[in-house]
Image (cartoon, rainbow, N blue to C red; front, side, top):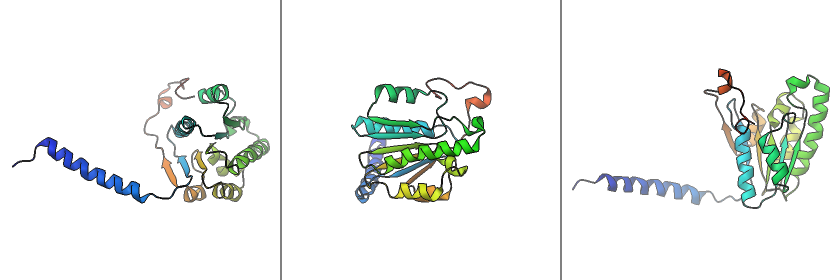
Length: 201
């Protein structure tokens, strides 16, 4: 008797379900995770803010620290500041380093901002902490890498942290539980299309 297409599909899906169920059962370590979103592709911060919304949906407390950004308003900043008082939101506020062109001032701003991040990473009331564009602070040696890695490694066991930005070094990659590298295949900006409010910022 020939197997029908429907029966073949059902058998295939049953095997797939068994594999998925086995992986779920094997993942029995309950703790917070560190996620590194890196690469030259668009969407690192967007993905991080998706996790912010996900945590807020469950009523969790969230901390967001943005390095580099802050000169230009973004939709996520407007929304979180106006609609989500339960989010502790802090920006370095200097804008991009290639705009300031003042290394001493940038380092001082990075160190002030890191003190805010460090406080969050010691506070077990934060379910999720997002350190947006932190990688640049390490790449430019604006922050001490050992100090940053120690704070990330010793955070409360139930706290998750998301780090975004290009690069950042092997230390961050080794410490992270999940590393996702976004690849830039095609970008509208390269074709002369302006950044779009509500999509790009």
